[in-house]
Amino acid sequence: MVVERTGTRIPFSRDKPILGMLHLGGSDREERLAIAQQDVAALAEGGVDAVVVENYFGDVADVVAALEWLQATKPPLLVGLNVLHDYREAFALAARFAVKFIQIDSVAGHLPPSEDAVFASDLARLRRENPVYLLGGVRFKYQPVRSGRSLEDDLRLAMERCDAVVVTGEATGQETDLDKVRRFREIVGQEFPLLIGAGLTAANCREQLALADGAIVGSYFKNTHRDDGVVELAHVAEIMALVGDLRRQRAAVGDAGET
Image 1 (cartoon, rainbow, N blue to C red):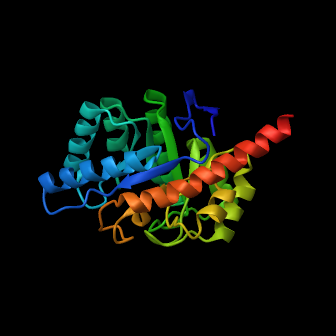
Image 2 (cartoon, helix red, strand yellow; image 1 turned 60 degrees about the vertical axis):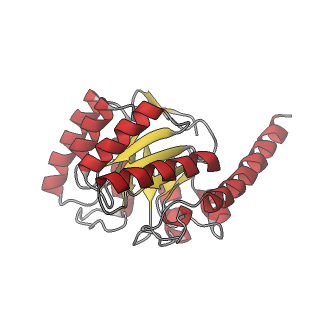
């Protein structure tokens, strides 16, 4: 999964990258940062490839606090960012901090045509100013479908607007339907990166990653397997052991094909 798109190199050098989500839970800003720090330590020790800082429970100020800490401590993880409901702020923060990628929950399909044209122009401008790697959702959890276009048309537009498409089910922690993943793969093709954005577990990891190029994992890594928990190292290690096996199998197949 190392390709060149829109002038920026995809930041994930390992096959089937796993991105851990920082939901920024906690009762106040101090506790949210403390939990984020603990979560990052567990994710790093467990071997994930990156973290995504998101204002899921916290606010933008909590995102900034986490980014400041990450930039100061430089953990062995790539840092990504998702500012929910404010993609402009995400680009502004990506320019300010050492952010390698941005996630936007929907880059096509969520707006009626007149509003979508404005959004597309604004997004293109932001990407020219800061060509940070962009993960873009289509038919994403909690996002409306207002384009009046087919899934294929929305995905084709998404491929022009982002560097990797993210597919999810209907809700956080809910397994992404394999038929939906398969349909997305058929449309975007084998060369365009496709990530699972929700619901990856130890039980479905192999079949999900047989179709997708990587995954964003939040709930399953938590001690409760819910978004409101804290990251538990054993859960991270469980997933990463399966991913490690898959990587070795794929590498062996590749080596055999070259002989």
